[in-house]
Amino acid sequence: MTRWRALCFLALLATALFPVITVTPTVPATETATAIEVQENLQIPLEQRRRIARGEVATFSVVEHSEREVAAGIALTLPIPAAQLAQYLASGQLVAQDATIVDFGLVPPETPTPVVGPAFNANERDEARNLLDASPGTRFNLSTAEIDLLRSARGASGNSDRDAVDVASGAFRRLLWERVQSYRHGGLAAIAPYARAGGAFTDPAAELRLAIPDAERMGRSGAELHQALLRYPADQPSQVASQVYWVKRRVQHRPHLSLLHRMVVAGDSSALHLERYFYAAHSFNSMVILTAVFPVQEATLLVATTRVSTDEILGVGSQLKRSVARGQVRDEMRARLERVRSLLTPSRPAGAESP
Image 1 (cartoon, rainbow, N blue to C red):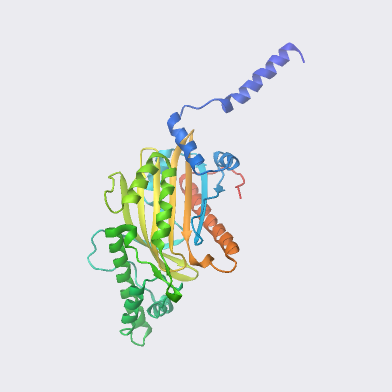
Image 2 (image 1 turned 135 degrees about the horizontal axis):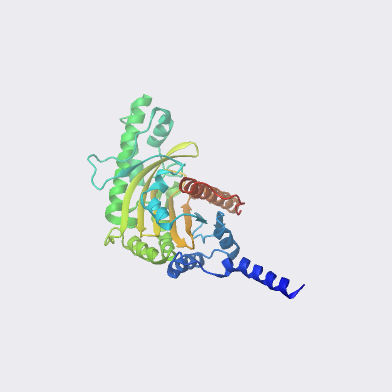
């Protein structure tokens, strides 16, 4: 190779490497450092972080705190301004665009009547009748006092399906209202445990309490949210937006109502969005979904963790049931973030996703 050709080759090589070894000054270094810190706090493996940087959806493990809990994490980067994604989270679109949700509604601080949520419809009459016949166990998540209330209401249900639907709807909507009031006034300590067979109880508050430290791993906004969660309902900071919703899904081919506490800490270019399901009618006991956005160079990091508590993974075959449940959680998280990407980006580059 002649000296001239060697110099040309070195020049081309330097040109090719230059974009890799330089830092684009689009985002302040401190903001990029926050995104890096969060990924380190979440212990996302280096290979998965490379996938995230390429815009792929990458999953990562999340430590599970109890025999009832399954947890998973997922992240990707989007080629849009962080402020746009932060506004998406702050506006409540994660809930509004959730494909698993059939219907939802805000529960205002003051309600004109002591009921929360929708009534059972005619197609849900079997669920209504079963609710009036509820007993301690895992078919429904009810306290002993709530079971007694439903049994008392059963006497007024009459023989017709219409009567059963009306009575069950009224009793259950009052039950939901009472749970909202208790939570708003007393926080986790006021959540009534679920009665199980044989005099046992499942305490959703215990699982929700174990999830609180997750917020600390999400940078400065996470520290603010962490303190708000520890103190709730007392001494809530003004920068933390907070609302309660009822949420309706279909779970295991049954109507499913839950109570959601949504908390958001949003800045100009970052946001932290918490969904705390402090009551669920059946199938799972509680759930916490933590979603955050942080600016990175010419893109935005979107990261989420989910914790679900369920009695259904206990007993024989628990490891297999836990693995299957964890896979289902990951699939739902992936679908949710893919929906965010499809709504906010006009097109996406082709590329394989990580397992």
